[in-house]
Length: 299
Image (tube, rainbow, N blue to C red; front, top):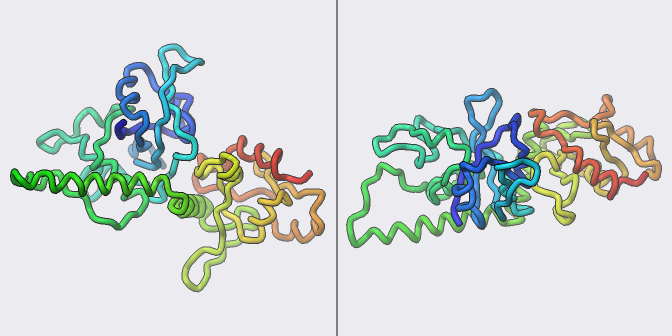
C-alpha cells in the first residue's frame, strides 16, 4: 500500500471516470498495484489551457484487467473516497516544485514528470493534500534541509507519519468532505443559486447558497462537482423533495404535484435552465440527473 500520482485530463482518450475508475496500459501495472489500499492524487498537466494541476485525491480499491480493451487495466476507486481539492495545486509554487520526488539529486526536473502513473512519497502526498485542502497546519521539512544527526534521525519519522495519518483522516472525514464539497460546488457556480441565478452574500461575507448533492451520499452519490448544484435554501428543499429536477440538457422541470406551481416557477431564472458551471467539464453529469428524476422527482 503506497501513494501515487495518476495523470488525467478532461479530454483524455482513456475510458476514465476519476471517481470510479482509471484506465491505464500494462507498462504502468506494477506502479498502479503498489497503490492498492492507498491513496492517489490526480494531476492534470498545467501546460494545457484551463487545466488544474493536482486537483483531487482518491483511494484505490483494486486493479483489474479491462474487459473492454486488451492489454489495458482499470484501477477501481473505492466508492465514496474521491475528493476534489477546493484549491488546485500547480506543479510549482514560488519557483519550487511541490512534488519533490520529481527532482534529481541536483534539483533538476527528471523524466518522471511525464509518467502517467508514478509513486508518490508520503511527504509529497501530505504536502499536496495540505495545499489542496487549504490546510494551515505545520509545514513539512524542505528537502534541502540538512539530515538530522545520528541519534536524532528517528525523531522526524513520527512527525511525518502523524501528518500522513492526519491527511488521510481528513480525506475520510464526513465533516471535512462536506466542507470541501461546498467549496468546490460554490466555486463552480460563482456562489449563485443554479436555479434562481441569485447571488446573496451575508454580512459576514458568506454566500447564502448551499451545496446540494444530486444523488445523495446516503444513496451512494459521490462528493464530486458533477454530482452537485449550488442552491438557495428554499430551492435546495424543493430539489431534495422532488418538487423540481433537471433534464439532461439542464432544463428546469417542475413537478405536476407542486401545490403552488406558479410560486415555484417564480423562483426559476428567466432562461428556464440551470446556470452553466464556470468549467464545462464541471456541469452536472447525466447519470446523476437521471438518478434524481427516477428516484426523487414527483412527476
